[in-house]
Length: 316
Image 1 (cartoon, one colour):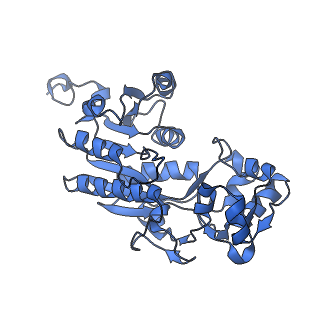
Image 2 (cartoon, rainbow, N blue to C red):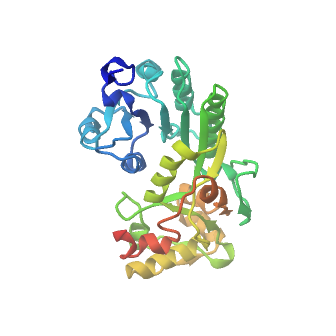
Image 3 (cartoon, rainbow, N blue to C red):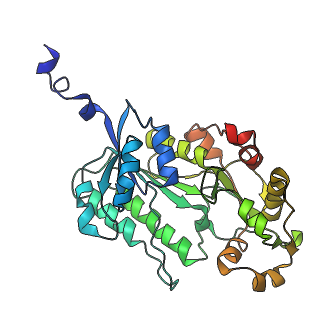
């Protein structure tokens, strides 16, 4: 039978490609699009939800079809129903200035929209390792019970639960728990500015373990999870670095040729540092990334923060 008489052969190539929708297409979303082949992907057709008309031109230049809509306006995103085979959701919960809300209305709106018609085959959600809370410096894998200490982390737990609810509709949901994201070409993506300001860190006896992932490795993990993630699976996406926060800043200072930050005991830091920064200094954990390496088959290009912060690493 001639190809133009077969159902598949009669369709233009753009309709035969898998359609991938990125929700929350900021820095990591654009990097993920690049991993999926943008701007000239032959494998997938890329789309991105954006609430800003100013980003339309940028998205098109990156080979991404922009879809105007706002997760804070449910009616504007009903068009997402049935539009994509696979979805990457990197949209954060709204900021709650009062610090009392533990719900993520944006994730609820997205889930409801995706359920209006045939749901996607797979969805990847970018969560945070803050859902574990303070673990006293212990090694933490994905089986650990969540224990969020802040309303910010509680909203992420709510979002994770909503994504898992969507998974009951047959969607293969992957929840990626993400630590601090860094990259030299990312806005605020290195400790340089903080070192220049001389912001203190905790004294060694009070210091906490911190975790990191390079933005490019995170993008690769998002892309891998779209195709390789196991159903309803949580994956820690973190590098192999095993450092306390103060040691991380000392390392960065050496690489940048800057003075090491001053050290303060915790009781003095409580009155000298912003509350947001103190909240990160109140949680200590060391993430296990075995599942990321084995199930997503991800080989880190930046296994240690030294690799990503050094001048040589920035060329990779």
